[in-house]
Length: 269
Image: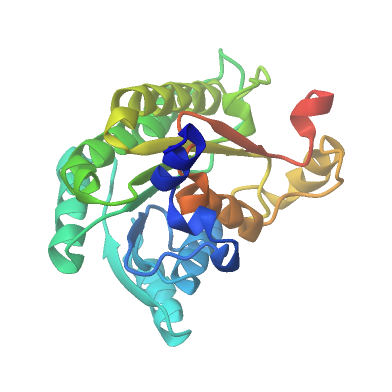
């Protein structure tokens, strides 16, 4: 057998079969944190629409249940599991509950975040700093570690971080947010290096400002001015990137950062 033929034999069939190029997740289970609203809700809806059974996690049980109900009403499959993932025991329990109820876990999306303030070093609030480290670094670490046994059993394990363009290019404000997102990228790359040999693919998406409640209305025009495409990114556009990295079409990608920011990093922000 030729080298090319041998490589083709090992490649995912969904990639090789051009007639079946659509990203499909039938038979896979995805857990998305912070999925009750905003971008997380968009991720959950899209993966469910493409066949995944989705675990909708949020600290707010009401919004988690509402998103799961919307998915089910649209013909998809979803369950809601509320948890404060910044607490180690709660994060570990979330994973164990998801696997106990659905029997597996294939896709883990670290999406949860929190609103932050733009402050310089001297005005940085220690409590806010610790909260952002907890949600952006500690929680993904707890969850990924707890999910490893299930991910190792998956045929297509994926871990996806929703990071930020500010994790790549700090702007001199909001030390708490910038440092936590930079640290999160370090966590992503370290996980990718350790587990790529086991077939667990770990990547990150770095959006620009997303058109959600996380961007206060008074900041929208200023954010648009920094984006060459002249608008904020829509949650559904980030969801499309999540779907790609979770798909068989991304089966040879790990440890990478996908910037979805309308060209902001190209011109400098």
